[in-house]
Structure formats: structure tokens, C-alpha cells
Amino acid sequence: MATWAVRLIGLLAVLSLITPLWHRRLRVELWFGVPTASEAALVITGVAGVGLVMLATGLRRGKRRAWQLTVAVCVVLLVMHGIGRHAVLAGAVALVLAGLLGARREFTAVPDPVGRLAAARVVLQLVGGGFLLELAMLFVRPSLLVGNPSTLARVEHAALALVGVSGPVGFRVDWVDDLTAALGLSFGVAAVLIGGYFLLRSGEPRPSKTSGEDAAVRGLLAQHGRGDSLGYFALRDDKAVVFSASGKAAVSYRVLAAVALASGDPLGDVEAWPGAITEFVALCRRYGWVPAVLGCSEPGAKAWTRHGGLDALELGDEAVVDVATFSVQGRAMRNVRQAVSRVRRAGYHTQVRRLADIPGSELTALRATVEGWRGTPAERGFSMALSRFGHPECDPDVVVVSATLEGQVRALLAFVPWGPDGLSLDLMIRDASMPENGLNELLIVDLLAACRGLEVSRVSLNFAVFRAALERGQRIGAGPVARLWARCLRVASRWWQIETLYRFNARFDPSWVPRFLMFAAVRDLPRIAVAAFEAEGYGGRPPLLLRLLRRR
Image (tube, rainbow, N blue to C red; front, side):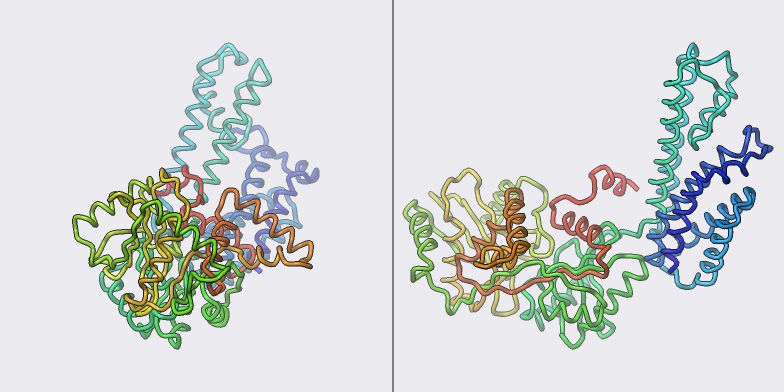
């Protein structure tokens, strides 16, 4: 109610700017030197209205600082409309203000601890830069000015331009007047918007785990890691973790763009999942974060819905191969069989080893090779990638499958443990200069053949986004909506490997396990999408904004 009421008041304040009665009632002389109150009041009312619309989002998340600023802006609006005797809007503002004061205990979300300093720095930089630029324009070409205004008049004009008010300096050319006014107002608005963003933004702590938390997560994986193939990825260096009160369950997450993005199912005992989910949701409320879960299973989705109040959206399917039933024989596996035979004839050989069994010098060379192939400091991935390779002290049970040609490694797969008897694909990378197709098929087939010796009974391969939608759209009798959605996904596959991964995974005749995206409200989906893309390494917030956030 507070969110919508404040948003409505902001819209009414903006609409009041075009009310003729409002303009007539504001023609009052003021003491501070501005010819009339009309122009300044219009600017203040417009900025306050837009500010309330922005602040409403912070109120929805229960932010204490947003409540404080909203109260202050409502007081300003009340004073301005009291001067103008605009009774309707003044009464509405008074009602909203009374409601906000009565509900102050509802707004408890902790703000970013350095938000004030960051906002002050940005505002000073933009206001100072805009003021100096305006001043320079007034001094560089005095021939464009009417008369010979004093230095004080030029300083006053430059300062007033930042708030959209005309100053005492006149211009001989109209477009110069328009340019200085637009430039000053642009800097002023940018200072308000960007400064407000930093002031109201939720904290984005650097992701980290203490050694004790890391050990506790490993203990939960050792006892209950068989349930979720994505559980081991909770050990990523860029994930934090929150535990249930009993310590028997936990949720790993990362905060990006005010979204606390968890991945996979909660760790630990299923009976203790509600406690971990409750702690995670409470943490989100405390800091004003949007809760979201990327890639949880169906049992996990039910738990998040029941105990976290989140909604579910089917995201895709995970391909899981049963080692006992897998075979390259038969007509259905002909393409895989032919690809593997072709690569073997080209002279490729494979090795399947645990990371702890690879000699140190060879592992160092493998790590350098992978970094060279990758070409970027970090591997893409968040929910289904470990983003580190070649660290036996951290990941001794990781299984590495490599393909060599004439003694040189040309392709490599890495699988993290999935409980005591499973593996989950982490890294799939190869030398881009090698033309042979079928290397990945060879590596997977040889891994599955070696799984019995590794005491592994199931292997999780790639995640296929929107697989069910692609499949439904190709069925006979599919409706127009299903066909259109499948066609859109195939078009998107030109840039992202949507259909390609689905077709590749399907070659191995896997079982398809659905995975879900969990969210609190539909309106949060765009923000969650930005956070998910940034976490997975496929974009996200603008690079300039990220640099500003790092510099703060």
C-alpha cells in the first residue's frame, strides 16, 4: 500500500505541473533573488514527483533509507503545495505522510554501508563538473552574452542552470541559451538519479566463505551430496552461504544487482531445508535483496514454494546418463559411434583420471593449456560451473578426461563429484584450432566406459535451456503458440547454444531432469535476468556502472 500510494503521489505531483491553476497560484515574490517562485517551484515539484516514483521501489523492499527520504520529500511537497494553496494534492500528500510515519517499523532493510559516501562523491563530481562547464561557456564567448554581466551574475546563472531555473544572464542567440539550460539541467538530473541510485541501492558484499563455512559445506556434501548434481558448485569462490539454525542445511548464493541469487537445491538434510530457506529469505529482507534461485530441481522447487513463498518457472532440463544402461550399440547411437570411430582413426587417445592422480608438472601444464584456450580470466558459468581448474588441494576428486594427439592435449572435460557415485560436468573445452568434430563425443563415451572402475553409476551432462519448449514445438499437432516459441528459440540459438546443447545431449539418450527458476514476483524477473546473465558471464549491468561500483 505504501509503495502504490507514494507512486501515485509522485505521478500526481508531475501531473500538477501542467495544471494552469497551479501555475497561477505560484506567482509569488521570494526573498532569495529569483524573480518569481513559479519556475523554481515547478522544478522542485517535478524533481520531487520523479523522486517519489523512484523511492517507491525502495519502499517495496522495506528499505529504511528509502522511507526516510520519502518522508523528507513528502514534507517538501506539502510545503510547496501549501504555498500554492493546491488543496487536493496537499491533502493527499498529508495522508500518505501520516501513513508512512505510522508504518515506520515496517521499513527495516539495512542500506549499503558505503552508499552515503558513494552518493555524495558522485553528486559532487557531477554537480561540480556541470557547474564548471556552465561557467566556462559563460566566460569563453562573452560576445554571445547580452551586455557585460558581472562575475557574480555568471556564477549565479551557472548554479541555477543545474536545477533548471533561468539565471540573470541573457544571450544574443537563442540556441546558446537553450544549450546552456539543457546542459546544466542534464548534469543536475544525472546527479540526482545516479546519486539516488547509490544512496538507495542494496549492499552488494564481496562473496566469500570463511574456512569454517567451507568445511561445513564440504561436510554437508559428504553426508547428503547425492541428492543434487549441482551441490558441489556451492564451493565456488564467489558464493557466500547461509546455514539453518541447526547447521544441518545451507543455501549458497551471490548478490548481484540487489538480487540474492542462489543456485541448485539447498545443501544438507532435506528435513532441515525449511530452516535454511527461512534464514535465506530473512537475510534478503534484512538487506533489501530480491530472492531468486537458479536451476533447482523439482523437490527443491516445492520446498522453495512452500517455505520461501517463491513462484516457479521451468527453465530447462538437465541431461543425466545412467552408466549401467548406456551403450553405443544400436541404430539410435549410430551418429555417436561414427563420430567416435572417426576421431580414433585420426590418432586421438584419451585418459580418465582423478585430479589428485595427475602428476604436479603435468597438472601445471594442463592448467596453463586450459587458461590459454579459455582466453579470459574466468570461465563462464555460475550455477553449473566451478570456475577453477587444476587445484587438487581443493578438488582432489574431480575427474579429468583429456584427449591427446601426437602427445599434445587437444580437448578436455572436467567433472565434479555428485555424491559418492556420480559425476557432474563442470568444464568442456578444446583447442579451437583443431578441425575434428566428435572430440567431445569421444571424451564422454570413454568416460562412461571408465565409470565402472571409478565406482560411478550416473553422469550429469550439459543443461539444455527450454528443452521441453523446443520438443513441444516440433511435435505433430503442436499449437501456434508452441511453434512460435520454438521458432524464437531456434533464432536465439544463433547467438546462444540453446538448440545445439539440446541436440548434443540428446545423442547420449539421457534422462531429462527438469530445472526451475524461483522468483518472488513477476516484476522482479527483469532484474533477476540481469543478475543471472552477469553471474553466468553473459553480460548484465553496463561495464561503466560496474567500474563505478568497484571504485567506491
